Length: 393
Image 1 (tube, rainbow, N blue to C red):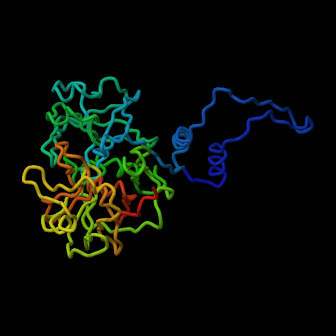
Image 2: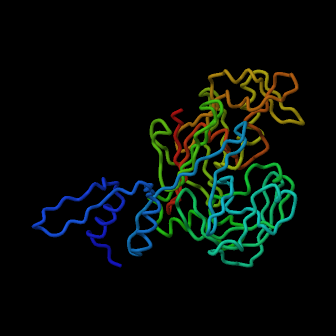
Image 3: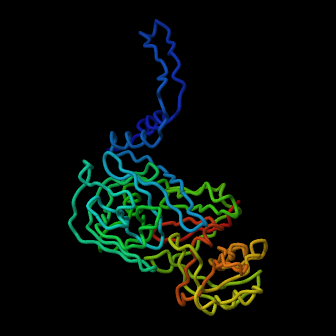
């Protein structure tokens, strides 16, 4: 359908919040039909946009969708609620830029881990479509899940697409202790477990549903702001969440959100360490190569590399005002030394598990310890990049 100026004006008029007071028209101009306000009316922009897009297929009204996050203490992981199917069934999912599959337990799953979570009943959804292909996934911590693929309407913060989903009929025991029901992968489709499956971002962008082809991440921190108020913003950027301007760092390889880290520093002093790395919302800590981990902790008095627990730092570091820096796109982004005192060992030693660990030579992982201090915009354009800026609070 050709979109005319009149049609766009119609859209704007419908989306506007107007005062539905009685209409006053002079009798000589015709018969007036009084209007009255509906006392039960609740404004819902997303619903109005969906209605307009359905009624006028040629009209694309772009939108954003915000998903509030729950912080699992102590900044261990973050999850949000996603609606799937018709009528909607809500599942709690861990949004993960380090993987690409969207999955959660099927109602047919009988493993102990599945039974501890919401299980999606595909038979109860009028929009569910069978796929039949087998699906399985495993993660760096040794956890795994498997089942079959299907597709249904997935609604994320008001943005709805038909999406291929993994329905787990088996889950490893590690998922039994997780508060979330499954994962929402935000990586590129090249690392989907089943070849040819498109990601949620792929489908939302192709459908012209997003104001901008981005997902912006604000992770809350217990130390910085009490651990509340975090969100994922699909299709938009919240400039109130960061200071200065965003620095866009080009993605060097699509799959994970991989970038080049040109230097690491402590309190502004270069350590002469560089590597490829990924910014991964699905990993709690920052994990670097062994040489970089040694160089960083050498600058922190009282640090020790315990053979059973990894790098430990004094818990007194929580009051330190220094920083560990990671240079990307010509700019250094900081992790406060206070966040290296991640969690007290609880043995009376006064030591804490460090928020930065080693063992990841060649591909560093900047996980939540980094992201909860820096606003990150994952931009999936034809030349993808990650916009980064220090958090405002």
